[in-house]
Length: 202
Ligand SMILES: [Zn+2]
Image (cartoon, rainbow, N blue to C red):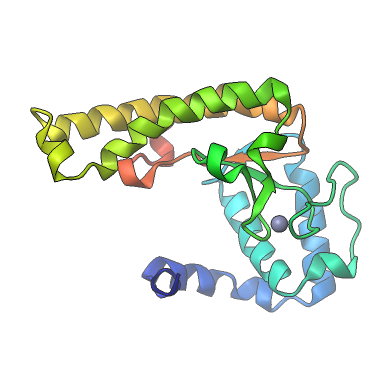
């Protein structure tokens, strides 16, 4: 991960996070508890600025083990995450079958795929299995690229399909997950297929 932490984007986000590094533990815990109450009960785009801000705070809080110090009252709807004991804030990605739902505090698996409620597991599996071969087009090797008449067109078609499937996640999958979790975030972009959040309509 060394190359990632040295990337210009990583450096910029590290600079952004300085505001939270200047907070003392109590101020940080209170800010996060209040923000959690505002996030509660809704599905959020990963690209939403408030979420980006919360994720910065979450990293600082994780580094300082804020949640183990019990400095502020977390809204009652949030159970403790099994991975790091922070409040349960899960992220849905296209890798849900392999990685489950991802913790926004420690980056680990917060709900393993096999532990997802039965009524959403099947639908998520179907969605992720439909998405995987479309995403894979971005990673085709030379032989696969030469196997189609026009790779640029194949890439473009895959990007369009990814936009559609990400929209399905936001419209259909999120409400189902919200029946089971206090909040849910979804990855609303596909960087490998060059799908940006603004390309994904709800
Ligand atoms: Zn965690």
